Length: 147
Image 1 (cartoon, rainbow, N blue to C red):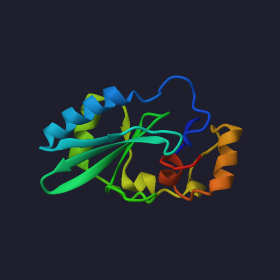
Image 2: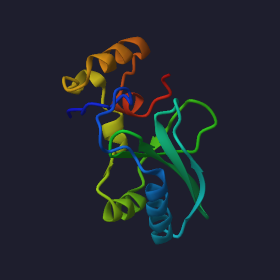
Image 3: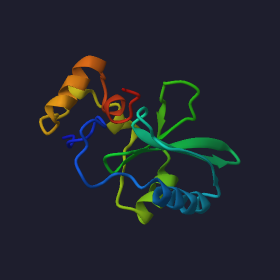
Image 4: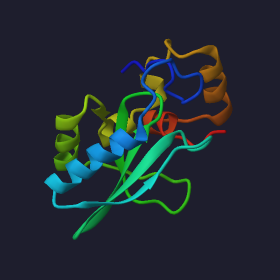
């Protein structure tokens, strides 16, 4: 796996800045396809570097994470702190993929150790952030609370 510039959320390339309003509409539509509803939207700020959209189904809750600089999405259990527990949700992933060209990352991809990832495309400032914060996995690097 090779991560593109902007993966850390620092020094993002111009272009694909996530449009939260459009992505929220996509999540509403995708949620309906799996008999769920959007119950919360939290925009990214200085930290975290991702938007969150909470989706509630009668049997479970899931949080959709949308990277602000790159077209990456992950699913996680709702969180109360800075810990993210990634989960897979194939039905919701299929619904989102059918509506947008973002990439839904699986738990296996997110757990990939950084030692197995090509980081050569990242800007020097991003390498500085990695050295400082010391993420160990793709998920920790892509979806972070760094300031």
